[in-house]
Amino acid sequence: MSTERRQKTVVVGSGPVGSLAALYAAQRGDDVEVYDLRGDLRDPLTVPLNFTKSINLALSERGINSIRHANRPDLLESILAETLPMYGRMIHRERNGSLFEESQAYDIHGRFIRACDRALLTTRLLSELEQMPNVKLFFHHKLVGADFKRKLAWFEAKLPSNKSSNGSSDGGRNVVEVEVSFDFMMGADGAHSSVRYHLMKYARMNYQQEYIETLWCEFHMTPDTNFGDSKFRISPNHLHIWPCGNFMFIAIPSTDKSFTCTLFMPAEKFEQLDANPHQIVPFFRENFPGVAGRLIMEDEIERQYVKNLHLPLISLKCKPYHFGSSVVILGDAAHAMVPFYGQGMNAGLEDVRILYDILDTLPNDRTKALAQYTAQRHPDAVAINSLALRNYQEMSHDVISPIYLFRKFIEEQLSSYLPSLGWATQYSRISFGNESYSKVEMAARQQTKVLQRIIGLTSGVIGISVAFWILRFMRTSPVFHRFAKLIREVRAIRSVRASTAVREIRTHR
Image (cartoon, rainbow, N blue to C red):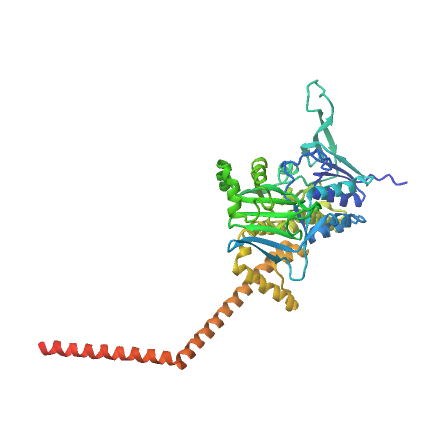
């Protein structure tokens, strides 16, 4: 009988990215331990770290493909069964005093993204992990130290107890320090990652963090129960947007027929409303037509605005993502991004797939594999991070811009009627494919240059055509000829008067 010790993999973070990473490791025969600062998110009493339900997730091809490659029968199908297809954006505006909705499809070929509840997704992944005999889950464990050379980690564990060891009360939990050895650690513990903090002591990490000026506040739109059975108040197959230039209100459907809504707005505007709470409802009436009173009761808008936190949005980049053969960071721990492209979770899930694709090709050299992972993934993370920042302008403003809509139309027509050109919108490449983010960004730039040339050439041709038509009209129009004759007569009279004046001056001399 073989007595070879199996590799021990420790995953810090039990969210979607950490849970999927644990599944990949366990599928390859590792003994896996998952540690999380929080309690089990399947427990309704567990409060997320940001004290909100959090922004509903948009699950797209990259995330779906990564879950598919976990090779767990029925896992993907059970997750997709808890999602809702969103075929496009629904733009809400007011026109001539009436409410107006405009649907903008994400894709000319009918493809869609999926509205996904973060808690449901996490629950499904954790339940899958619990079925595996080589996986152990540890909650209420805070990473407080790590030695990535000796491959040791220390966790502050809160164990159930009425009193701590010294007799003092500690909220019903006894705090002890636990030392854990490992062969490989994966940090998927979010933007404020403890693994990354300790990794910085070993790797020469370049690190950049930015809080953008926009904050967000969550709202909840309940189902419509006016006629007995619950139903959606607005279309369940769209991401709804009320665009207002530098701020916006969005609504994403949930399977319980409610909507998770989010107000994105500059901190300065939040401060103005905070100082004048009685202006909250009028502000909604003025800027988000149909929301106040129709979709969310006015008193609920004010109550939720005051009760729910106004939270910051962080954009984070760092490099490298690893140290030696012992540790790597994934998801938000490596590249937190603003949510405006709906790619934060999808990029994190894709991290897992790409990491293990590389590890599988270099099974005997994890040091080289992790270095290759950082080199390959960092440009993609930088690209999607930048695209996410820029997409706020598109969602809050460009969706009602004629120039944006014209360009989108041209790109979709080229994609549909000239597929041999390989043309596709940037959004389609990002959301419905698995091409690397950096290559998508490069392709989008090239398409932009081509479109600018086409539009410039078209404008020139149109200008020449208009000028030719005007000249032709001038030559054939009786009105123009009469006008030209009048101009000639005026000029002749002026010439005669000028000549007469010159002769008079000479005569006087």
